[in-house]
Image 1 (spheres, helix red, strand yellow):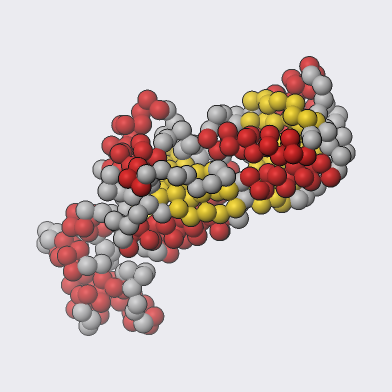
Image 2: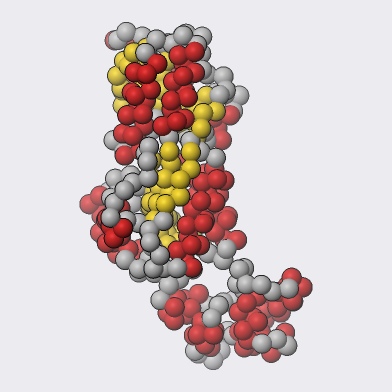
Length: 347
């Protein structure tokens, strides 16, 4: 913490609680050393840091983050914007991301933004916290919207596609780019190698990631001469997919492979096939998902899927946050990671 930040803490009214100066006197160190002890990134000898923290705890002292934000005009908060926390992938990633950002002295503040009609209101609400960064897990928000909305709070935009997006720098935000085409092509190659001839796609809800996923799938199917039977609506949801697979199977020609836009949809497809329709997986119909959430490895599903290593993705986001904090004027940054095929028992 800077000297200005410490001074801001000292401005609290007498009797409002101990200050950094009180801790410094009790610990017989400088006030700056107290600030450094509370900064995980500062180089402080371990025994000295622990001594200062113990003294602070005894006095009931804690840093005043609100005061620091008033001085620096930036908080230690990272805002994470999601449309829902019910999706396992987002929940698992946010859990892992929170852990590493806390190690860096940052705190995560989660905002749920479901309705487009309230975007501007919610943006204003987020801006009031002056977050150090904003990570937006929302495909239906354009990067330009994020840049206009958050201004001096740098926005990070996880995006899927075959290449990192090319835009004029002034219109870009920092990006985490997931290259998913290679993993999808490998999945289709696996299906072709096991003799599959007809594939049905369970799509999401029109998200940009899903549109790119379906495009990559159709390209690979054409290359390996597997018939594309079309797409049904799964909405990234277990129950919706289970019902949709049941309806399709009873009305249409039956495929011998299903590719689902996410693992949760794949679970719905598997349960529809096995328990509702009496179809053996993978003997009669292979099923492949996307995301590689923890539950995909459960024995009940043992799902063949495509996914990004969770820690690799979280560390990439961590690097972007740190780099932007180090240089707020740097050109927009793009980190690229690859989705890979994980072969288990359903294909």
